[in-house]
Image 1 (cartoon, rainbow, N blue to C red):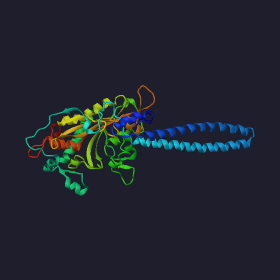
Image 2 (image 1 turned 180 degrees about the vertical axis):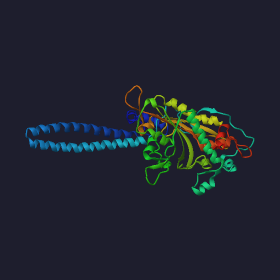
Image 3 (image 1 turned 30 degrees about the horizontal axis):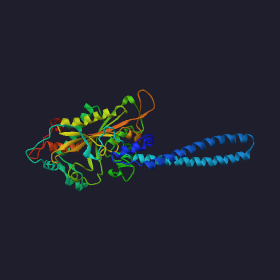
Image 4 (image 1 turned 90 degrees about the vertical axis):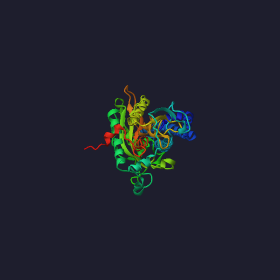
Length: 423
């Protein structure tokens, strides 16, 4: 959530900045609510001062045995009290409306984010690896997976519905191997603390990360209790581990990693993504989350992005890194790098990880603060997150980039030990 004081002091600047990311700021409504709130606070303060003076005067009148005057003044104090209560309620309502508006306003883009209307304006930062070439027509992951008896979409549709998959045999083993490999890399080489969080979260946690109230339609919600949801990503429980806390600067940055299923309604049509495993209602993902101080968050973003890249490099997968433009930026992010892996069947790069710095946007919502090392009042932390990586899409990239003419595909050397039988 944006800083209300900053927004109210810079309404036009904020409105213009949000317009760069195709978002609107209701300036007139914010101004009116702030004006009403300020007027109510001013009047309430004046009446409270008058009530205090009247209360003192009543005491003096009683000592002077002027009961009638004291009774008249008590009636005035009672009337003042009713008005103060009404004003306090008005302030509370205005503040509630102001917060409700801000909960639906996205984060402000960082100054170095490219300005653009959509993904076509994203900026390519670097490309890694050789683009695979074939002397045959490359198959897509669905065909490769079915030829290797790894993917069973028909059974998934029978037991659940569309856009689910049953992984069998090598497919199930690859999912497990990839997740274990990614976790080992992030924990042993990059210093993340592994976490197994709940896969069910409450409404407050989703509001803390910016998923609610804006994106209710993208979530799977319980009928009972109504404030429970399935996680859309481990970013939500990991970020909220420190919700409502004041941390010591010395423990920062906190670095968490988790492998979890993710559940998304994926409302709407996605064309070619409806086929296969690219966009499903349930998928596995290794998620990275960091909580840090305000000064170092953009350096942490570079490091976190590098950690996600290290998985792709270790697997030898051709990919590129792009900086999202203002028009393609995620709701809570101030800056995002997308890692896009090459899919030969589509002759295109497809997103496999988004690594974002959310600044203090999520921390304000989740009330995550820290005490500066040099003293002073607590400051809001900065939160970051990124996929390290989406396991299903990594499997897809492997199957397509390493495929052979006979329908088989090669396994990267670093992954083979994870597929060997172990007791």
